[in-house]
Image (tube, rainbow, N blue to C red; front, side, top):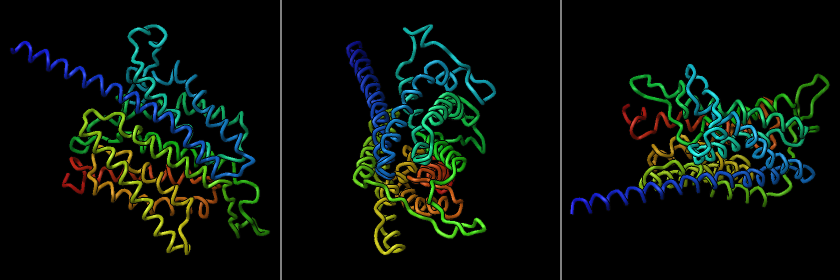
Length: 360
């Protein structure tokens, strides 16, 4: 009888392991689907004449990313650590293919492509295609693999400090979205604004900021809904238990919903009517902000993060456009850069087991 129970337990454990292995890969497939969402958002929020260029950039982000991530990028994340800064390149995919961890490779590849895609919207409508291809290769080959190694590959951010606390970014508020937003800020600043964006006086001082409305809010909204749907895989793929997965899906729903509600009310009061494009960006901002702590915050914590994101996205986008005078057609810096940093910091305050607001 004991032997039978042992067998039953082993079978149950194996089935559970296989089920979560399948969910892990399904979640990665959902993250790949985010490429479609980003393409729709960026195309809808920009002018129709640039649609082909933007679609091509989003397509090539993944294709170029795959080509450079295979030989080098994956090894820089998970290779043997060198000083906490970088992993040793490994070529096991080619030299030991029968024992290679293909699940981990595919999962990290789609995340890498997401980081690269964030930037294309901020640099839209004035970037040469060849220049963008070079950028896409660099961020997928070097930038993402190195900074991802810091926290996910055994680098310096995994070292315990301040009484045993370690950096926590469950699905990439900082490692993916903040990095993508910062890259977008740098790229857009280097490129300069689109012609006609800023009207200047004879001394060169900006006296008027002109809006370039996107050609299709319908496409933009479709992209946001696709991204929200795919985000359940983005945040939930690495869950290890059913209860943890359920918690992650709930917090990943609450934060963007509250962020959008707050943004709607705020823009209604500020502008006299709800701002549709800003509310769509607020949904994404809430998703970005909850990504770091989706596994560690309570529903109340997720709501607080959503409230903060709903305000932050408005102030962030306006600050970049009106104060820094940087032309960001889709608000990528405000959505991903600002809220990626905000969500990571709020995780340190609101995490139920180690957060500052919980006495830790």
